[in-house]
Image 1 (tube, rainbow, N blue to C red):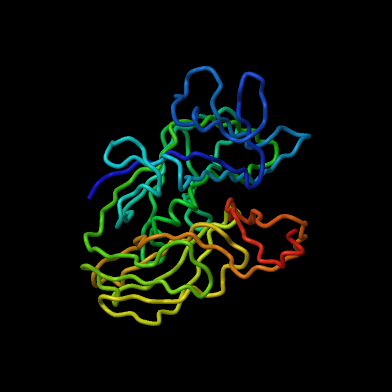
Image 2: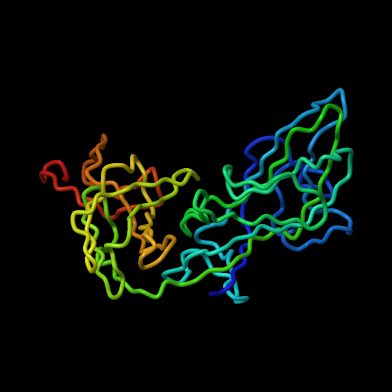
Length: 321
């Protein structure tokens, strides 16, 4: 078992009103670099949440800020080592425990402390006070820690709400991080299928020491910032072999898909990323304009940063010139 620390690399105001308190007083999302490093008690800039306003302005606000961990940016440190990305995590990485910690100060009249910390909308702390605060993921049977993929994609959040009429509160936020413990599943396996894949592609896993009969399989990906899950139907699932066809559930998605194995408690508990592949759309349709003398072209996918070049146009010679 080891320890990890994650620092968010992006933020999104879901609802409400937040200030990034800079010298110019501009409005916007948090400056996440400042969020990691500054301590309360020094002059701005550091992030501020403005929970409410004195009358006659708005008196009650429900604010939610979500912070995300990029899948390809260096946001996680294992055992104090330099940060790496989710894509660089060792195979078999499983989160065992997680805790959000931060430092918060207060200036205003909110004596009831309407300030909460959340992993996701269904995993939220109770009302928090000031100074050093933390919230541990319950990791219960009813609310387990999700797969490492979903853990990263969902990120974490700060929620402030339900001020009484006339209250006004500003909170300064710093030293924000997610920390916890992890372990690596020691069994081995091989993803025999290569990228790219599409609907109907056969996905094949072979086992070294893993027992696929003790796993359930899902496919997870992110579309427009929203995590999606597809559950395939195995065509073969034994202790040493797992096969299934990619179903037609990806709509117009193009990008990286992750294969997740969830243990049934016999061999292991929790979820492991078994591998990832690039998913593309084939047999697409559209209207193409033929230009005399042009024998090849480049085809671009509007849903992702993928281009296919050259595309040979097999046409009569009198058209090609």
